[in-house]
Length: 357
Ligand SMILES: Cc1cc2nc3c(=O)[nH]c(=O)nc-3n(C[C@H](O)[C@H](O)[C@H](O)COP(=O)(O)O)c2cc1C
Image 1 (cartoon, protein in one colour):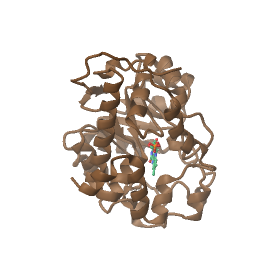
Image 2 (image 1 turned 90 degrees about the vertical axis):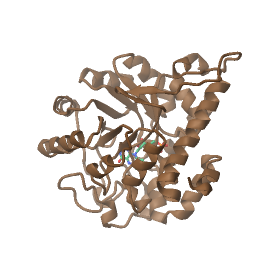
Image 3 (image 1 turned 180 degrees about the vertical axis):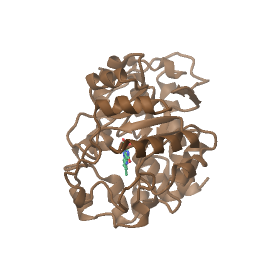
Image 4 (image 1 turned 135 degrees about the horizontal axis):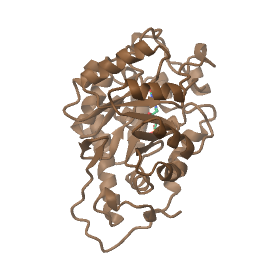
């Protein structure tokens, strides 16, 4: 393990500063930015921190069990790597490096549609850890079906359909420091995708890129041999409707505040959605999770697992796979300590009463 990265991982703030130093300016902005005034991106982080814990004392906490099953796959940690695009902007090996780093930490990696690495090549780096594939659904169903078949054949265990970006959001900051067109920013798994575009490309302003609706979702659930998860849900009624369409998991997410600004934060709606879904599907959450205490709060409020978006990219840019592993292990260590300090020795012991309403 790279010692410099481990030192950076005393807290993620230090790692973030270091990542900014090593990334090209446009890659840093692409990673860091939120949409418009970047209000949601900032509030996501603040919202978890604002919630107060109500720890239990005098409990058995020496042995802590953090294992969990995610759509039938047993993993040792409830912390996943969120789908993020364009990893070649952060490391020469792109998504393969991330997959290797996640696997070394025993963490589930969700690969993004947007990237210059083939699904088959990412699957080769799974190291036995489960991997899911995140889809931006193109209206060409034949092309989408063919991609799903490749994912199944490669060994991906679930399909995550992102629904909160029917049109790209806008980032003034990214427009000022744009990612330059190059083979690094292709989406090689998308059929017919023009080369070298990122979400904040001015040519895409207002373009309905992924106008998926509930009828498309029903088709996808029927067509896909993997369980389907919907990512980008912020309302209990939408979550219920997705479950009625046959999805097995709901990812509560506002995309890290990258497309629609001034949405509710995920910390504010996780309980509503967990209550609406009940036991009919698994619920996960991402957005602004930077501390073990954030994870404990998210799980206590009803999430089965959490996802980290930007932090693994910081690790990736500073030290490749080792950096991703270091981030995941650091957050795992913080989570276990927070659980013990809250008097919880299993994920089942993380219940809503641990968080002050
Ligand atoms: C650079 C970057 C690229 C992203 N690309 C995708 C993507 O391709 N698909 C997707 O569903 N979400 C994407 N996201 C959103 C993440 O999956 C996740 O929802 C968000 O980053 C979580 O917030 P956090 O970064 O505060 O942890 C991206 C996020 C970042 C930072």
